[in-house]
Length: 164
Image (cartoon, rainbow, N blue to C red; front, side, top):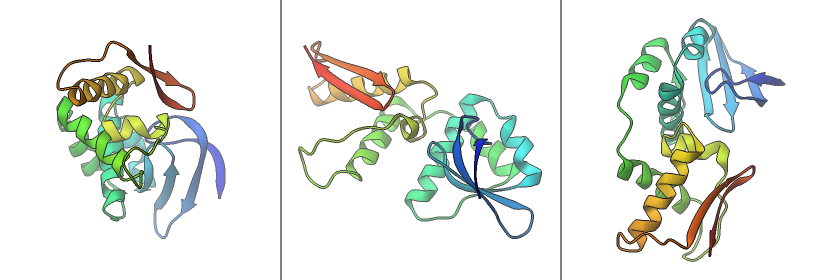
């Protein structure tokens, strides 16, 4: 069944697909978090997780999907992933680059980064963190010389760049 609901993981109000699964489980398909299954009993655990831990859980879900693994969130797993440290800036930049590489078919191809996934992919709580990582990548591309003419902007439909 499709319904307008808050995703139990990211708490964003949006249309997500919720499917009843055998036993006590519910499957959520969220554009931000990805696809995961959770026991009804563990839903209060995921709802009570702070935002810093939520983004780490979303990144973990995205990683599992990338490798084709079904995701079953349990109370213990939610707490374990939430307790992990945030990856370093370079690790987060690598995650973002890997995400982009999987979506383009050739060098020089243009693409749009969609906000709803970027937080999970780059383990970022806010758009400003994603923008900082993009600026870091721009500086790395220019041999650690930031390009003052490049401006990254967060837009409703994604991230854009412009040069002065």
